[in-house]
Length: 258
Image (tube, rainbow, N blue to C red; front, side, top):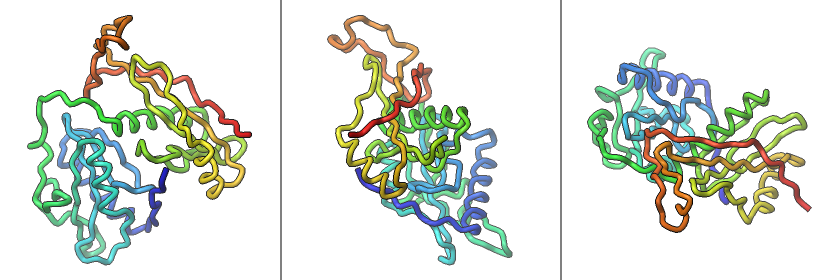
């Protein structure tokens, strides 16, 4: 377990972030499938979306270096690599009080080569199997949507499968945290991590007396043959990006510690 820097968010950064997102949406010409579309910490990326079968993870930049920007290049590269996506930066400039992209078209540059990126050019028809990061992100989305549906307020969330907890929220009795795990069929329930006590101790530093929960989310391809001997013979349909997936989630499991 390790920490993700939360970072500070200024009003001017939110303005810049908002204009960057609006520009991307205009370029797409149709509603984007956003992954991260909120200016709240923690920050691995500032914005991310799926276009066709490709993920794009973006950090905005202030070319004049006046804006306080949360996050770091290392975080951006880690999530892009984990999801087999594209790490991009979006140089922005503030002119007469308004933020706008510096580059033409989508306004994106490859985060490492600094070459222009045009997302539609990178879409292919190749089937891409979902990565552990993608499944974790999907699982966290399922769990947090249920938390909100139950009337609770989210504090923060992140989808790095190597970082715990995944979610913080305001529960009925105070702050609560959730360790989320995704599991693929023919598995039935995800295993709880062995270091739960260490996770709890870390969470206590943030909020003493906070309540811990575990959430297991099961994913199955709609194309799965449901072979009774699948675990032995490997006759299991892969989970491909963009294909139909069945989700099973039975709610939070309250953790108890001696």
